[in-house]
Length: 420
Image (cartoon, rainbow, N blue to C red; front, top):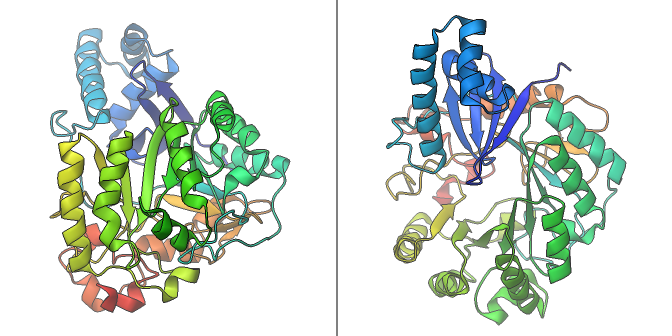
């Protein structure tokens, strides 16, 4: 596999850029998430900046000697481009003169890969998309490091450690440090129960960038019933408080089901009161245990999310909506939630504890094994290509005016469109 060049820049404001070449130019990946597509000229400028020790002066002269752009023009073009990219990186694309496109293009490699280090868990959630707490074979520390090597060589700028509960593994900090040393952004998805003060300090010191903590309700009995562990709420709450007292970017996430629907608004108010500034919500994921559970329908989601938006905006917080939906039933653009569509094998992949590569954390169909197969082969596996090209959509969806943005919703729910 030919190594893909990927460059990283981090400024004093904490903005992380990863630059990766694509066939028709390149992509600038901001903080591991936002994707800004660059034409060939813009790519050359940003690449020169990163290659020349992030010096404006060296960038200008490099563009002159390497690409024949006269210094006066190179200076004007580069400083304008740089300012626009920094403005867009802070969240203001319109102010930067950068237009967001609804249609998604195909990328040559994932933007993020989720690493499920284990399926062991100290919770046993009734709606778990991974099937709840269970043991499987697990890659060793060295095998995971080799997997991280492969991901970086393939041009992947971000890994998220997940499970199960990856804090159960005592090599988590070692793996975070290793990924960070490559230049990757690192995240952790956790139930927060093991986020004690000393552990959080170790996670920080080894380079963890952000943590997402699952909390299902502000009511102890509702939370404990959903995660099926008595006493879990108290530990999760303490984990959130400890994380908020660190330098980590902290996000919470809550799965909206019939069991906690009536508590969502109060839960958001509770989290805002703790100081949480990034509130994540998602619908039920219809995989494994989630298949037979009842989530909220489109009207119920809309009603709750509109109230949550008012709360988060009032408190200068961000509402993050994760779930792809059928736009005819629930259009996130109309609800001011941004474009949402399935990212499986489109911008993300996941790797299970055994090393099996799958399209996303909840789509349990194999694309290969990271221990023996190349990531290029997994990315170009017929199933991955089918998911990217939406070959599974029927005539009704393909003829829909929203198809480019919607992408047909989540393929796991496609056969159950009555959900929406």
